[in-house]
Length: 206
View 1 (tube, rainbow, N blue to C red):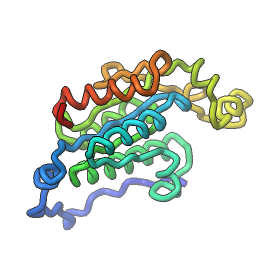
View 2 (cartoon, rainbow, N blue to C red):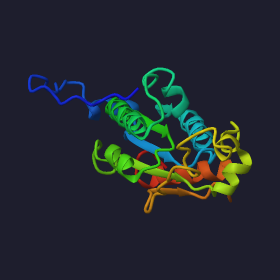
View 3 (tube, rainbow, N blue to C red):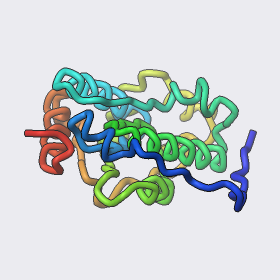
View 4 (cartoon, rainbow, N blue to C red):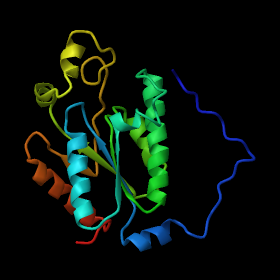
């Protein structure tokens, strides 16, 4: 199923409320941000994002992790895997992440999001400095060796069309805010790299 984005009605306006992002962020003692984890299937996006969220929670920060599979159980359950549906999937997630950041949260989003234009669409929804592209930079050979869901094997057999990295393109980030060499570092090292990046940007205290 493909969902078209309807044009905005001129009678629909955005309402500003007295409890705003700045106030919510002050209550939480943190700076809101969206960490957008992108990488091939099996690269470790959800694993790293989950470990980072655990670490942030232990440090007392308020977070929410948006995972690709989980979102497709509800918010995007009506979407398939055509190029158009995948774009709509990312658009919806971007809008949701924006609202969560408005609530003062540190949002961790783990999606393949293979196209640069889609990731830029989400970036442009947020103020400068609030969107951090996190490239889970794992070679496809390593991803294919892991193949936790058996997807690469099915894709190689022609059972899954439009599979990113095999029959569909993945546009790797050129200048991500955080570049994680996930094929070379341990999970703890990758999490620490993310923590240091968040501290450097004053999103969390060091």
